[in-house]
Length: 187
Ligand code: FNR
Image (cartoon, rainbow, N blue to C red; front, side, top):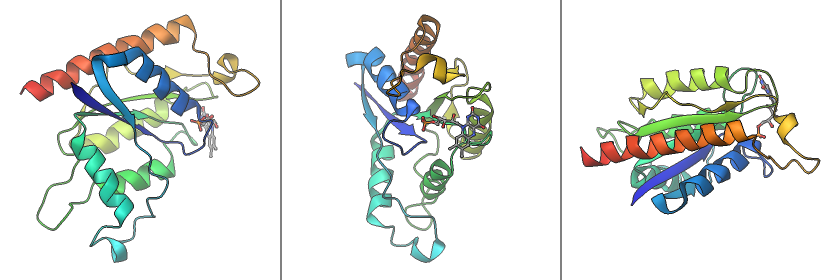
């Protein structure tokens, strides 16, 4: 069974993007292992502490290595993805030890996101595509779910209830990503 690692660019408990990831997990069901990466303990990148890598960094690198594909769920902060996600990716982009490659190299990836504004994370997603393509991840660009105006799909407790349209869009991204990752694993 393939392993998908979900990386959520928001650390808050009630994150809409975390809820979106849980929807994706439910849609995938038993077709893949689907785990959410917890990384709030990863320190700020600082080359003074890079070698040997701090324990949380070692842990997230192992989780990425063990995954067959990475699914990013990104919030949009000022038409960009979040600083915590950039910090995580900066750590992951560095070799575990000198002379080695980094753990994102060649990994299949895709991106989804939900936000309150009209862009629905599309602008943040495009920036994230630039970054992860630079790191030589293999990005599945179509389809990529982006949900704008999330207040229209959120109750007073902040619980996200997807529209039928968003749900089927998310399902088609999940189905496509499973195929995309499987092809990779077979190669
Ligand atoms: C936002 N938000 C936001 N929304 C959007 O659609 N476009 C944007 O550029 C921004 N910019 C922005 C900056 C900062 C610093 C914050 C904290 C928020 C609102 C954002 O969509 C909303 O807070 C989401 O709920 C964040 O995602 P999570 O945490 O729910 O996953």
